Image (cartoon, rainbow over all chains, first blue to last red; front, side, top):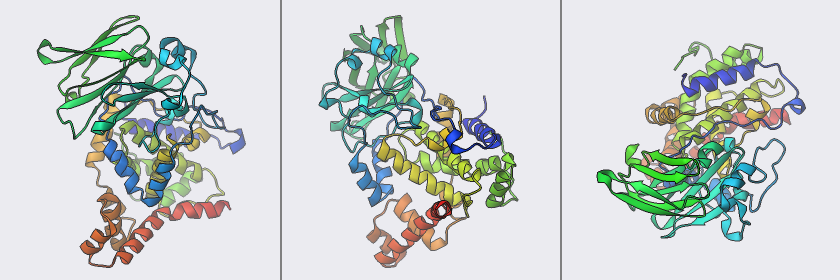
Length: 248
Length: 193
C-alpha cells in the first residue's frame, strides 16, 4: 500500500485536476479527512499539547482559555460535519448515551484537546464516566465514529482516540496513556457496549487485574507491561492486544 | 515514498503553472514540502492522526488559493505553508476540531490511516530538520530568535541573554519572523478585499 503521504498527494492531484467550479456549487458536507484507527492506543502527550499552546504564544493561550464553543448539543454549521445527535446504533449499544446529558458531562474548559474533523465528534454531546482516583472519561459520539477522551488529573495523564462505530460497538476503542508522575503505570480507558460489567487486564506470568465497567467505560491504572484486555461482549469473547505502552 | 519533485523549479513558478492547468506542478510543491510541514505539526500535537489531518487541510488550503485566479499566489510557499499550518493548529485548539473547509470545497475524499502510517509520521517527525527548511526562507537573525522562542520555548529575557541583545530586539525579531510566515496570508487577504 502506498505511503499515506503518497495517497494524500494523489488525492490533492485529483482535486487539482478537477474542473473548477464556483464555490456556491461546491458540495457542502463531504467527509473532511483522516479516519482514526481503532482500537486506538496512543501515548497522549498532554504536556506537549500544553506546550503547543505555549508555542502559539500569548494570543493562543488566551484563545485556549476561552474553550470550545459547544457547551450544549450544537447544530452543524453549513459545511461542518459534526454529529447532531448520537446515531441509533450508538444509542442502542451504549447506555451512557441514552441518559440525559447533565452539566457534569461537559468537557472542562482549557483541556488541550483537538479532534480530527473526520470523526464528526460533537463535544457538545459528550457524556462523562467517572472512575476512581479522580479518573474520568468522556464518550463523544460522532458521525459513524465515536471518540473516547480520558483524563487522570491527579497524575496529569490522559488522552483521546476515535474509532469507527464498528470498533466502538465491538469494544475495541481504548486509550492507554502514561505520565511522568507514574512512570511504571499506564492509565487505561476503554469503551465497551452494554452488558459488559467487567474486563480483565492480563499481565505477564498469568496475573490478571479486573476492571469494573461503569457507564460503558472502564478506567484503571495498570502496570506498564500489561498485555491484553479481555472480556465477553454481546458477540462473544473480545481480546485487545498490546494495550500497554511498553508495546509501542 | 514516491518522489515527484522538480528541484530546479521555483515553488512560486510551480504554483503559477499549476494555476495554468498543470496539476502535476502542484503535486511537485506538495512532494517538496510535505515532510517539513508534517514534522512541524507532528511535534506540536498529541496525536499523529491529528498532524496528518492538519497537513491535509494545509495543502488543501494552498490548492484552493492556486485554483482561484483572483487570489495572489504566496511569495514564499514554504513559509506560507508553515504559517498556515500554525494558524490551523491554533484554530483547532480553539474550535476543538480541525478545520476542513478547504478539503470540503475541493470535495476531497477521506484519507484512511493505518498503524503503519502513524509510525511513519513519528519517523518523519524525528528525521526532518525543520529549522534547516525554515533557514531557506528566513533571515538569520529572525531565524535565531524564532528558533529560541518557538522551537526551544525560551522566554524573552533568556533569549536576549543568549543572543546578547535587548529583550525588545528579540521581541521585534520574533515578531518579524512570524510576520514573514504570515505575509502571504495577509497578501492573499488583501487580494480578496
